[in-house]
Amino acid sequence: MSDPRVELVTQPLWKQASALSSSAQDLSPSALDPDRELVDRWQAGDAAAFEVLIRRHERRVFGLLMRMLGNVQEAEDVAQETFLNLHRHGHRFRSQSRFSTFLYRVAVNAALNRRRSLGRRRSRTEALGRRQEAGDDLPASPRDPEDATAGGQIQKQVQRAILTLPPHLRAPLVLFDIEGLSYAEVAGVMRVAEGTVKSRIHRARQALRERLRDLVDDAGSRHAPGEEPR
Amino acid sequence: MTHAHVLLRLSAYLEADLAPAEEASLEAHLAECAGCAAELRALRRAIELLHALPAPEAPMGIGDAVIERLRSGEGRPTRWGWPLFQLFGGESWLGGLAPVAAALGVGAVAWLLTPDVLAPVVRTREAAATPRFESAAPARGSATASGLTLTAGEKAGDAAPDRGRAGSLPNIQVCLEQARLGGGGSGTCAPWYAWFVAKALEDAGGFADEVDRLPAKARGPWLRRLAEFAQRSGSTHLVVDGLRGSRDPGAVRIARRFERGGGPIRTASWQGR
Image (cartoon, rainbow over all chains, first blue to last red; front, side, top):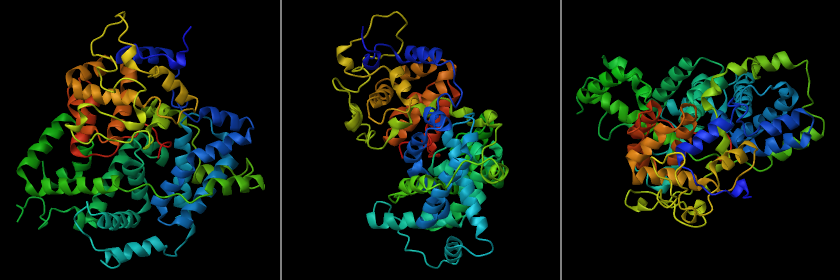
C-alpha cells in the first residue's frame, strides 16, 4: 500500500481538481483556514496554540502596522496590543471567517484607534505629510529605479506619501495594493461594502499618484486630460 | 465617455474590473486622448512603486513580549469589555456572510508561497525554455509540463503517465491537506506551480483547456494560486497567453490585470511574507 503522502502525480490537472473539490465538502472560508486547528485548540484552552498563532502572524501584523503608522515603536506597541486584545476577546471568534481576516480587522482598528487616541495632537506622520505637501524634507527624486541608492530614496518617498493619506484611504490601499487582499477581503476587514472599498482604493491611488508626480509622470511634461502632450 | 469619467475608472480598468462595453469605450477614449493615456501610465507607475516596497523589517521579540505579558496576567479573557471591543475593533458575528468567501480555499497553500521557496530564476521567455525554481525543483525530472507528464486533454481512465519522470512530486491533494492542517513550510509542493507555469509556456492553448475543464467551484482558487505564483516568481508574462485563451472570465480578468499592471494577487493573506 503506497503512502498517499508521497503518492506520485499521476493525474491531469482537471482530474486532480475534480477529486479535490469532491473530497473537500466543506468549502467554507473557515474550513480552509490554515489556522483553524490552532484556533480551535486555543479556544479549548490550549495556551500554547495561541503562542503558535502569535509566532505565525507577528511579522505580518507588524508589517501592516508599519505601513499604517510609519513608526517602528508605534507599530510594535500596537502589534502587541493587537495580540493582547485578541487574547482578551478572541475566544468569541466563531470561525465564520478566516482567522487572518479577523486578526487584520483587529490590527487595522487598533491602528485607527491609536490615531484617535492622539487626540488633537498632530502625529509625527502628519507632520511629515505637511512637510511633503510643502515640498520640504523630501529626498531627491531620481527617476532611474535601477539605481540602488535611488531605489532606497524612492521607497522612502513612497512610504511617506502613503502616510499622508487619510486613514480611511490608507487602510484599503495598504490592504489591497501592498498586502494583496482581494476587494472582498478588504471589505471584510474594513466592514464596509465592496463598492466602497473599490472607490476608496481608487481615490487613494489617485492621491498617491498626485503626491508622487515627480516619480510617475511622463518625463518632460505633465498634461491634463484632453490636452495634447507638449 | 468624458475625461472625468475615464479618470474615475482608470483604477478599475487596471484591475480588469469593468464591464466589457465600458472597457471598450474607455480604451477607445484612451486611444484618442493623450492626456488620459498619460494619466493611466502615471497611475500604473504609482502602483508599481507600491508593489516594489520591501516588507518592513520586524524587530525581534514582538511575539516574546506578548507571550511574556500574557504569562504575567495581561490580556485575560473578559466578557465585559466585549461590546467596546466589537465597536472599535472586534469581529461581527454575522461574519458568516462576510465576503471573504471569495477567498475560498486559497489560504490552504499560504505556506507554499514564501519568497525563498519561490526564488525566481525565470526572467525572460528565452531563459524560461525550461523554467527552474531552484529551491522547489522536483527531486528528479524537470519542471517542464511534459517532464511532469501532465498533458492537456487527458481523460479519466487514461493510462498513468510516466511516473519515473514525475520525480517525487506529491499528490496535490496531499499538499492541500498539509496546508489545511497548518503544516508545510517546505517547498515540497512548489513544483506543482512550476508545472503550471511551464505548461502555459509550452502550450498556451492546452493550458487554457486545462483551466476550463476544472470544476467551476475549484477554478477560482486554482487560478488565484497560479496567479500569485506567477507574480512572485516573475513569470506573469509566461502565463498571460494561456489565461487569455481561457473561456473562464476570471482567467481572462487575471490576464488583463497582469498586462495592465494592476494590484498584486495573493491567495493567502498572512503566511509567507
